Image: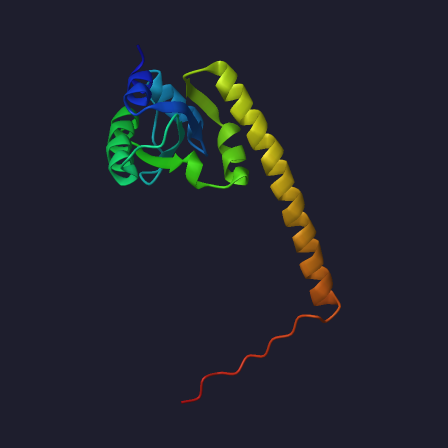
Length: 150
């Protein structure tokens, strides 16, 4: 069994993704291959979705971060809990590499829902942005700045 599978099962994780600029290097490390580290500040970004939220989120975050760190050393592990972020960020993570899935049908369903909700959020954002720019253009927004002269 792969080490990432063991870690995910131990922490009751349904899905685990690698995302970000170092995702391919992270995948290589998880597969036991050697990689070069060009920047000592580089990190490997992990995103996880739990089957059931842990009772002690902070304790889980700490222990899971340490275990993931051990899998991708000398890189730093950066951990994101998918239940804590909006759908647009979740969309960015599922564009990455799925390295653990307890159930493929669940993964497909989750990813489909994320894409639908992220699409809705993006449309709302675009509408609000358009309204804001129109209001500024039409002079509905004014502000005055006065330096504090004590």
